[in-house]
Image (tube, rainbow, N blue to C red; front, side):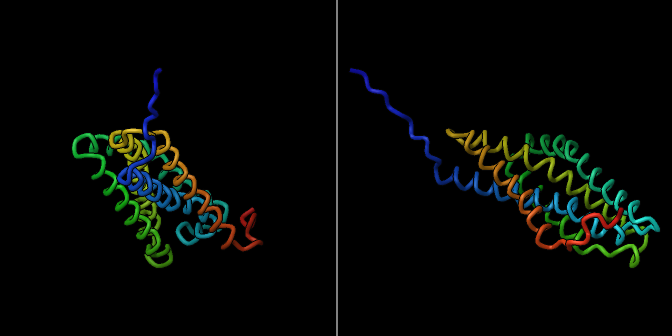
Length: 187
């Protein structure tokens, strides 16, 4: 008679902590990143004043796109840093960078207050956000695969749930805060 022993596939306390913090970090980073894209139409004229409101919105979205383009560059930079100094250090650095850049965007004076420095500052902070975001998620996946003994797929799935929750949270905040009349106000 042969018996098959099923391995214990429950996450350890340490693995739960890693996955939980990874999901939370992914949620917060993607919320911070996407909230700019969602609210660009509302504050475009604050940083990109123009006679044509559509042009202001387009300029604001160009900054969003450039932040998005910075993501692969951040992935390249932070993958090297992670290989040299460890994934945990990269995760800490990227979360701090995302927090600093998000706070900076929130505190950034408008074009009316500081002129051309406002859009330049906004672009710089968005690029910093993109670099941080590009380094955080890949580093999270590698960190999970290196530290988890079993159930790596669950770790990745929970992390992606956190990331998508950040996107969903941004959309919910938009639905709560947006004025109904502003849906197509710039057309």
